[in-house]
Image 1 (cartoon, rainbow, N blue to C red):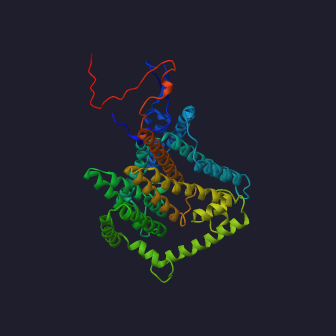
Image 2: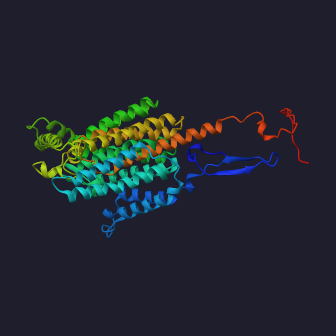
Image 3: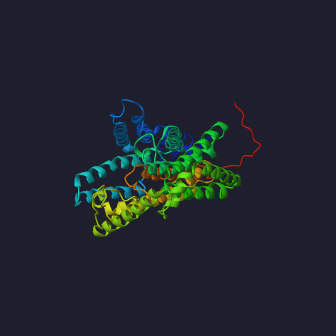
Length: 465
């Protein structure tokens, strides 16, 4: 039976076989299938990701009071604790960076000159994200498991895009989400779609049946249309940069020139149909005489918030003012609308450095995964998709304060699992391709045995007696 190197990581238990002819015991390693490792932790992880992205408590009556995410997070933690004796790997650097970031935010909460209790609550909520990231790095040890996690995020974004276009509210011409969380504010909604488009693109290229190709194509079109309808300028710029990286990765370097033609045609068509709002807001960014004067006022306000967050960072460079407290010092009770200056003003410069290190580790993991992929199509496609996704988030984070959201850390955790899987797959492939010695080692026979090993002709047949 053929063994898929991707689905069988290195480091399982060994089965010892005795050689009856020589009396010497030899060890033959049998890699343990990932289906038998960390099953409970992975099941809880799937439940948590489903609850986090699909938010069933917001669209099923009577479930709003049930703490599904907390229950799934606790189950994931319990599953991880029971699986600790089986862990054979060193946790990657990004997990240590994230742990240090949490420590810095708790210190910022303790030294906050504004509101320590609120800052502590925000820091404590990020512990749940840290637990999920650790469980993901440990339990997601095969491409099958990673594919399901990414599928949950991509599918949820596709469903929400369709629901938003169908039943979404329009406030001052801007499309808003139908659910809470990341699907309520137009800017947050746009960024959540931007980072999901490359993931849908990877599933599109992996699909073999025309039905699934049509599904993922429709999802990409729905998300792109919804981004334009939100009128989010930051989301639109993040979309342009993400699309450019996707075309470079999948069309040019991936040798799919037809993708360029299709993308250009669809881009023009969607812009003509849905791009009126975002184009108008872009024009009003630097011109107060345009019809969209609100866009100009919003742009001016964001510039003031940006410089105010820089000023707060200069006043509190070491520990900031505590997570969530910048709004009280902003002058108009608004957040910074910039994830980087928000982090520096509330957690101090050490928090910003650690935050950037976590995100950079994710980008570096995609590069290492492509290097270890060894021409595996699925690994390469997801590495490219996650690279484009992280680039899109880095651009979108300039215009939004998303530093305490969970999904940026989940994106990095995807890359961690992808790199570890590719690394183990390559190591296993090298072991399987190592040629066996032509003759048994001399240690197989004692010195008193005077045996001569004769070559056996290749045409010799062994028949049963």
